[in-house]
Amino acid sequence: MENLAVGLGVALAVAAAVAAAGTVVPPWRLLDPRRIAGTAWLIAVVSAGIVRENLKLARRIWLPSRPLASGMVIAPTAAHTDGEVAAVGLLTSLVVDNQVIDVDRGRHLLQFHGVALPPPGRQHARAAINGPIERPLLFLSRR
Image (cartoon, rainbow, N blue to C red; front, side, top):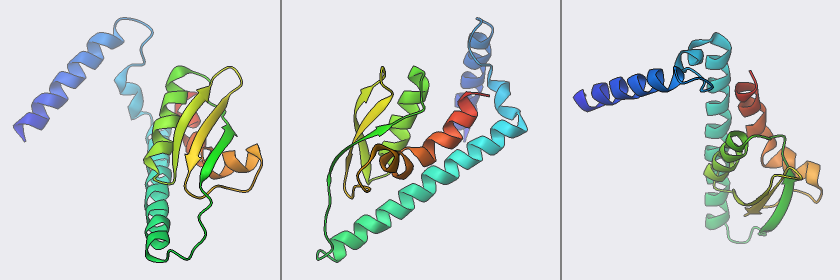
């Protein structure tokens, strides 16, 4: 318990010191009710995706007769900054079904390897893979 308290204290002290440096977002902005709601929304979406896709993968393993449509897919992204792209890549890769492979920042495209691919078409890929995570993430990052 003491380790957590000391860690929290050090983290808050570093955050306050860095926040005074200028362009860094101060940590107390997380206390805004809209940010708390957005963070809860993001956690819920990612958690639901992790549970859903793990159950689907377990079912695929237990019932190997199910067809496997693995491969690569390119999906457009609404993420523009380095932080947004990194967060979308990390959070979508937490969901076991899809892992980000490549990023084309200039054309706003992400390439994913998927266990079960969505129907052909970039908008289908975005709706199935990174769209659900991008909505709450961009809500948080652009406020």
